Amino acid sequence: MVIDLKILAIESSCDDTSAAVVRDGRCVLSMHTVSQEQFHSKFGGVVPEIASRKHLNSIYEVTEIAIEKAMISETTGLDAVAVTCTPGLVGSLLVGINFAKGFALSLGIPLIAVNHLKAHAAACYIENLGLSPPFLCLIVSGGNTCIYDVKSFTNFNLVGSTRDDAAGEIFDKIARRMGIEYPGGPFLEKMASGGNELKFSFPIPKLKEFDFSFSGLKTYAINQVKNLKYSDFHDFSASLMFSVSKYLSDVLICAAEKLNRDQVAVAGGVASNSYLKKAINLECKKRNLKFHFPSKKYCGDNAAMIGVQGYYEFISGSKAELDLNVIR
Image 1 (tube, rainbow, N blue to C red):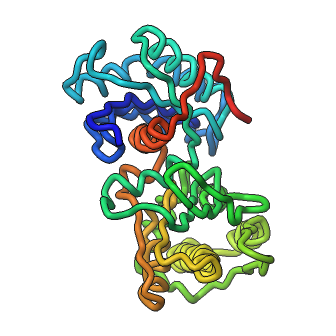
Image 2: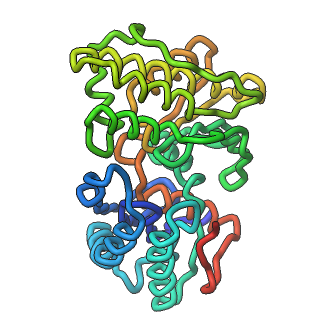
């Protein structure tokens, strides 16, 4: 085990520019993130061209601030640079990768390529110091909904994934039909507070194994919105949150039982959703399963999780060359 290893981490997979300094895989010395939310909200979603240009404008300053907050020397205090290489928006990823390559080359330190989804699972390690593989992790966000069997810190096996839309994506699209600006998921959750979770029902597909499908539920919900009065929005939002959270939870728990895992985790932007955490926690208590999740600041896209996963990739011997490119 490498001791006192400090990694500069860069994350630019979508619309957040983030840099962090992480020590020994569990200690976040600093993190600084710049959101582009205000630039994309009027379009109802992320515009790739705008996202990549905003990353170009922010990445140097974000990195400089993260290093300054960590109170280390840029030239002697860093041991490696970790960067997201997949999945994500191609233009956005290229900004982060090329910046990280230049930074690593200028200091003569190793470059580490990190899978964004693995990093979301790794976010759970930051505050759950007792957590270590094996465990099942539900990764749920605006772009991804999948379950991974985390066999080791670097060995992941995809157990199930969505066949169409991601859970966070349908929240945003349904919210947009309700007149709520992007990102709609957090506003839907607030609107759901105090609503009747059982007033509305939504179609939940029955798929083989542990895959998800949200397109039918999304279409049904959007059609329902047309007939709603504003006074129904609270109950509708609560019922939607309840139904989707129960669906995600049921599939995750079913996978845990079949694969004999005694601990589960949830990560990604939607992992901050209180309905989802409540649903999973309830089922875990019934079955005596351990349940782990990151705090809100580590749920969305952030560089700290890249640094954590980067550490484990590095000590396993994984290093990237300077010809590193976006992995589609």
